[in-house]
Length: 277
Length: 327
Picture 1 (cartoon, rainbow over the protein chains, first blue to last red):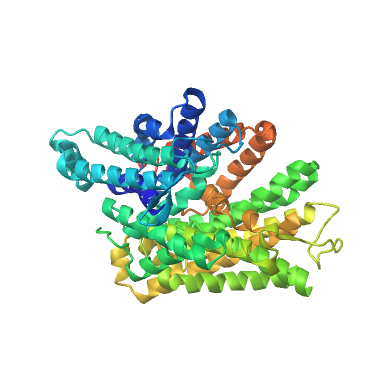
Picture 2 (picture 1 turned 90 degrees about the horizontal axis):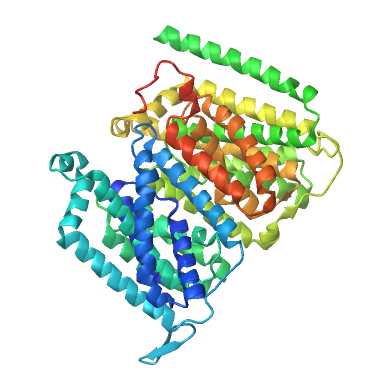
C-alpha cells in the first residue's frame, strides 16, 4: 500500500517539483484512471494488469492536454499565482467529479474478477494478497524507470533545467511549454498506472479521488517538495504509519496517524525529509 | 499619497454604511423565503470570507483549514446548549475564544512553515479535527447534533416563524468582519502584514513584531469564523462533523475572497454576492437531477473566473492598476 501511495505521490511530486504548481485535481486524475480501467474490463474484458499501460498512455495525453488547455494559463498569472493555481485546479476537480457523476452515475463499482483478484501468495510463510503485491512491484518498476528517465535522458535533463531556470532554457531553444506539457503528461501517466492497479481492490465512485488526494499531498510534503525520491520514500513511510495506526486505533481514525506524523516531521524539519529548496 | 489613502478609507466607510442601509431594507421587498435563505447565506459567506481574508489575504498565510474554527464555533455552542443549557450567545463567545486560542496555539509551530507546507499543514489539522469529532461519541460522533426547538426568541437565538432575525444577525456579523478588516488595514498590524506578505525576508528582520502580528491575524480570523459557525449551527438547527468541518467548507470560505480579490477590503463581499447566489441557483435549477451538471457548471465558472481575473473581480473597479498589471 505504501508503495502505491508512493506511486500516486510521485506523479504529484513531479508536477509540484517541476513547476511549483499544486494540482488539486490529482485525486480526480486517479479517479478517471480507475474508471478507465474499469470500463476496459467491463466492455472488453481486458484485465487491469494488461490495461494499466493503456490507461497510463491515455492519462499521459490527458495530463498534457490539461496543461496546454488550462494550467498553462494559470501559470501566467503574476498576481496571486498560488491562489489562482489552487482554484483553477480545484475548479477542474469539481468539473471532473461532476462529469463522472453525469456519465458514470454515483454508483459504487468494482472489478469483480481479475487475474489477481482475491488470491494470495505465500512468501516465506507470510501471506500477501496478490493485487497489492503486484501493485508494489509495478510501483518499484515505475519509480526506477522514472528515476532513470529524469537522471539519464536528454528529456529528463531538459525537465530539470527548465525547473531550475525557465528563462535560460528558452535561450537554448527548449520550448518550456512542451517540456511542462510532457511533465504533466508523465505525472498523469504515473497516477494512471496507480489507478489501474488500484481499480482491482478499491471501490470506484466519483468521489474516490478525494480520499487519496490529501494523503498524496501529505506524502509529497513529507518527502519534501522538489524531490521525487522524497515522494517515494514518503509513500513508504505513510504506508507503514497507516499500518501501525490501524493496529492501535479504530479504522476510522487510521489517517490521524499519518497526519500526526506529517505535522511532527515538518515541525522538526520545515522542508520535509528530503526537500532541498 | 497619504491624503489619498485617508480619503479612500473615508470613502470606503461611507460606501459600507450606504450598502448596509440598503441591505437592511432588502427584506421589505424580498418576501420569498427561498430568496431570503440565499441572502442569509450570502451575508454569512461574506463575513466568513472577510475573516479568512484577514489571515490569508492581508497577512499572506494561506489557510485551507479554517473549517476547523468554523466547526469549533458550531460545536462549542451546540454542546454547551444541548448538554448544559447555556444560551447560544455565551456559546458563541466561548466558541470564538476557544477557536482564537487554538489558532494562536497552532501559530507557534505553523508560522515557521512556508508556502505549500503551511497550506498542507492547515488542511491536515482541520482533517484531524474532523476525524476526531466523527469518532467522539459524546459529541454525537458522525451522526451529529440536532438542536432542540426551544421557541422563538432572541434570547435563545432561535427563530421558527421567520428568517428575518437570522438575516439581520448575518448582516451584523458581515458588518463586524468588514469593520474589523477596515480598522486593521490602517493599524500597526496592517503595515506589518503587508511587510510579511510582500517581502518575508525583510520582514524577518522585524522579528518578533511580525510574529505577533501574524498571531493577532490568526486569532481575530479564527474568532470571527467561529462566531459564523455558531450562527450557522443555530440557523440550520442541525450539525454533523462533515457539514461544519469538512474540507469543502475551508474552500467555500476562501472562494469569495479569491474570486472577489484576495487581500482587498471589498473582495470578499463582492465575491460572496456573486458566488453564493450563483452556487445556490445552479444547485436548485440544474442540480435537481442529481447528475452532477451543477458541479460541472460551478467548477467551470471557478476555472474561468480565476483564469480571467487573477486579481479578482475588484480589479475591474480599480482604474489605477488597470490593464497590464495582470499580464
